Image (cartoon, rainbow, N blue to C red; front, side, top):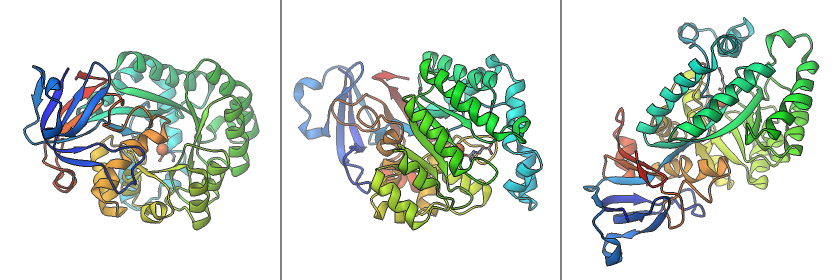
Length: 403
Ligand code: NIG
Ligand code: FE
């Protein structure tokens, strides 16, 4: 049985710990079999029979659960570097979108890109994420916005899930924006979502969750009600892009539908925070989107004080967050969301796993959990967050196998 020895600091990140307590053990060892963790604790307590030939000396490094990026838009065509330059010159994200750029321009590019090309590119992104220590990735559709192109994105995810080491969690985001050809007839598109796409996607198991973007220039609360209600009725879990650019009751809508997570929440108000706390919904923070849009950050401390778990994810997409670097997002969470390194690590492991309905299987290094492990080339969590490196990840183990 493989055993990691001489671990400088082991972060076990148990699901039932307070977010502030990452379950740190100094001078630890960790044993696992082909799939699961079998033992974790101080090395001096390691049962002698576990110390077989397959010991791997971690040379004092930090060992953490494989990271979980619980919010990405992984599959898309093209990039939008031109818009990045425009925003720096003073144009706003909403302005650019209203002029036909933004999400609509990525929809055009994604429709025009073949499934094979989309898959190749997304596989390359996953390779790079895995090298950073990320072993599970939630991935949304939402750049197709018609039947053919939404199914194309979800099929890309299905193919990647079968062939890539990284575990994928597919989410249907057909309600991202109103597609340009439906601007004058929004209802027809919402009908297509509710009467055709959601039932088909649920039936074919192409997505686990349904998400929607409730915002000015995207979907109204009423449309969100109908879409989420339909998705629930078809057995899909619920997520919601809420309160990103304005407070519009999105968090309350997520809570009302028993969402596993509400995401963005830069503008969440006190009522929204109370609603999430009451419903046990995870708040997914996306600090890279705040950084790139030069927008406010979500009020992480207020949320955690109210008892809401705060996950940290990248929001990787070609517009508001063109980076899949989860450790960079974690650094931003520390600095701009006043989350401690331990809170941040919990947010990118067990709490992120809760946001994708998997916190009983991944995101923690305790006996019985899946052996998804990252060895970080640093002595402890504080040093890792503080001394930012392009990639501090030394080795990755997914489902008990060295990658
Ligand atoms: O999560 N908020 C909506 N959707 C994405 C942005 C997508 C884009 O700009 O292409 C987000 O930030
Ligand atoms: Fe997003």
